[in-house]
Amino acid sequence: MTASLAWVLGGLLVTLAGCCLLDRHLRRACLVFIVFALVMSLTWWQLGTPWLAAGEALLGSLLTGAALLHGLGRAGDVPRLEQRDTTVHRGGEAPVRWFAALGWLILTALAMAGLLVTERLSLDAAGTLALVPFAMVVIALGLWAFAHHRHLLRRLLAFNVLGSGVFLLLAGLAGHGPEVQGLILVGLAVALVGSVLGVLLLRRLHALEDSVTLETEAGP
Image (cartoon, rainbow, N blue to C red; front, side, top):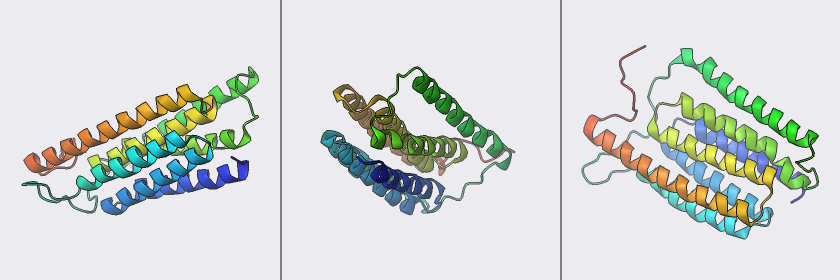
């Protein structure tokens, strides 16, 4: 992959991640996530890893996307969820969340600088390494959204976006050899299982308590 193509794909991933995590309209956010996963699949293909591309398209886009959309629909006696997130955020916690995401980025940058100084990280694969800054931004967005949002479906979206950023960072730093590809495929499968379990929890909570969060509404 050329560095210019890596910048285009990385920019698309960051833009789609931001749109997915910031949109309060839940169905639209889920659809944006499906497109995000498809762009991830294209990125894996351009990196020369067709098995990862197929795994991302199947596990990340098709199955995880279907599970998230299922969480919004009606199933049996469980009514449809509201299509818009109306939960109230606690503004006083926002600076702490942004600081946590910024702190993670700084620590990762320091770790990368240490790898470069000790020559354990090569700059030869310019296209692959060019994806690393975008992966860090995607991870920061996922970390912030997971801590910031109270709606469980939006947290599931953040969980999946965060995982995609971690996989991309791993490929950018460690390459995309067979062992790295196997690790990422296992991660995709685990993320799918976690998403399905999260959707089941959300629907059960909505059926029993008419709630979409794990927090009580009363409080500061």
